[in-house]
Length: 168
Image 1 (cartoon, rainbow, N blue to C red):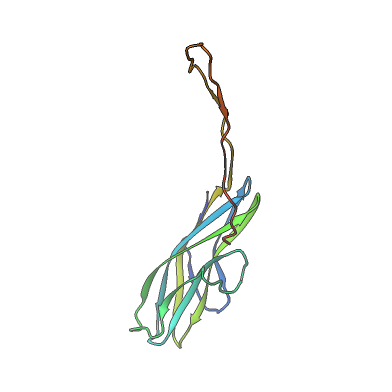
Image 2 (spheres, rainbow, N blue to C red):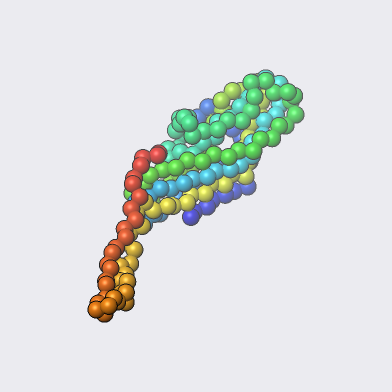
């Protein structure tokens, strides 16, 4: 597990994705990396449309990746007061052993004159799940003797291997 967070308030003033937080995780073998991001969003200063995309991605400044983004805001804000929104995004990648950096990022979707858009207190968590769990120990069951005092030996090995599936 790798976690990064900060208490920065990021002003969202561009339609290009900007990094809110990055996290790097090194995985020892092939597996899945589940990423969870959270923050809170704020929009104020307009009664027009204002909204922000938030997503998890590997590419700095990358475009919106459907269906991995979420959006907060409105096509018509009810007042110029500040409006606050919880933000939660999640994404899963299938990766080979190595080090990977992921980012929680945001960009403007709609903006109107006077709109102030921000994302604050971002946290990004990366959790690794291996796809192969290896061989479970071999064991022998014995001592089941019968009338002729024979021992029955049963030997077996279980191997758990999860099928790989590309979910990224």
